[in-house]
Image 1 (tube, rainbow, N blue to C red):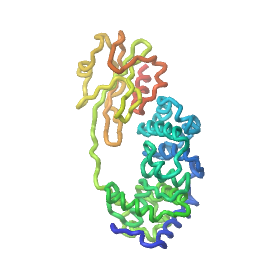
Image 2: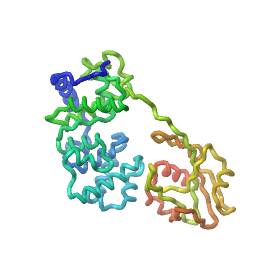
Image 3: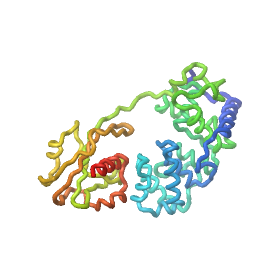
Image 4: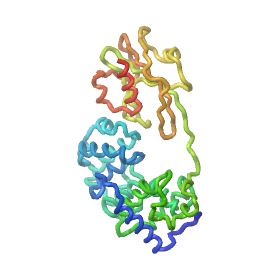
Length: 356
């Protein structure tokens, strides 16, 4: 394997780009954000597709563009409406950053037209800035995402871990050297689609790959071991109990605050424990009227986040009188759907509704 790769020759780079783009023209996905030059719509698609598969993000994109057809429409919206439209996609900081960036774009008077200014938008990193710059303006900036890491690591047999500073610099330089400067938009799209459809993470169909003849990983039977990551992030397990508190036709909700992955989303009363908790222990933690009736709706539900596993219980609690809990408010239960919530809380709502 080759850890000291240099973009060996213009001829080799040209061959690689030619094969990738020829494959793309015969296999590309037809997507609503393809073959357009509107930077706003391209930006929306790229933010939605961060940490999200195309099949999941497709309908969200259509709904988002239908509701906010221009950056001005997005900028003047209410944040709760933006979060509600995003509901179910996860990684809600993307929606908050999108909303904030839209306001800054409107203030400056136009969507930025170069990589540096695009990169300065809130929530936009190197990959997203390169994608917008190349797709909207055909500027020569190479994209490097998970698909690109995989294709390049396998084709050149690079074992430098992709999650190290050295690896990131190496792959960024390689990608830029290989970029088809005459048609960067098509080349970037081609390389990403090739990784998503052909050079997939598990069991790729190497026998029908146009790069097979020169692919180091294929020739050395190391496809399954590339790309390399240096470390695994420790997974933390947390034990959460939600209390869906109802008094008459009103329920108690709280809007999560700054510095939280679910910032701006609403949820019932939440208590965290260091281990699974039984009902007597839960009751000790909350000061509620003695006549309050508890009914179990969810027990031990596992909800997996990027670096956390949440073990969740949920109780329906019928109160005999209104109670005051700091930062929580009672809202009409029939209006619950107007308040954006995480997918986890949506599942709890479904379980509560099934108790009726």
